[in-house]
Image (cartoon, rainbow, N blue to C red; front, side, top):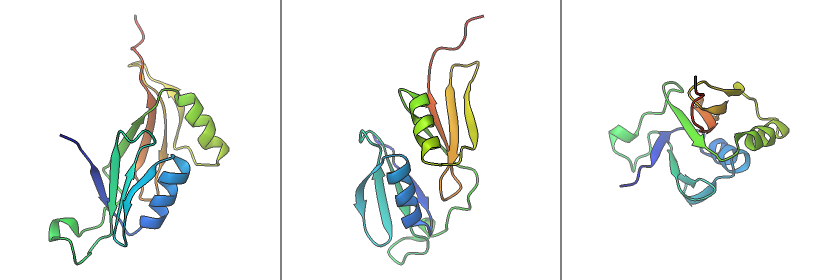
Length: 127
């Protein structure tokens, strides 16, 4: 089984630019109403669909409202990605930090209002 999350949005071109130029994603497939992107190592995919497209059934018509969704991208070296995105001038929503449960992470927001948590996991601090 494989999961591919999909977001319905008017912002296909802004989304494509953000994910490819900011996060290094590649384009798996694209047409005038659908965009399928893959992570740099091709282990994960995410798709974006124009709202109200006549080829789609009603459950795939309504646009995402910008709230209630987040993505987590796990990386081996979160400090490297933090530095890279800061150098590109990408606004950081949550600054780089360590959590007591083991995460070292920061967060950015995509053009659709989706929070993206970029994280390196480690074992929680021992007491």
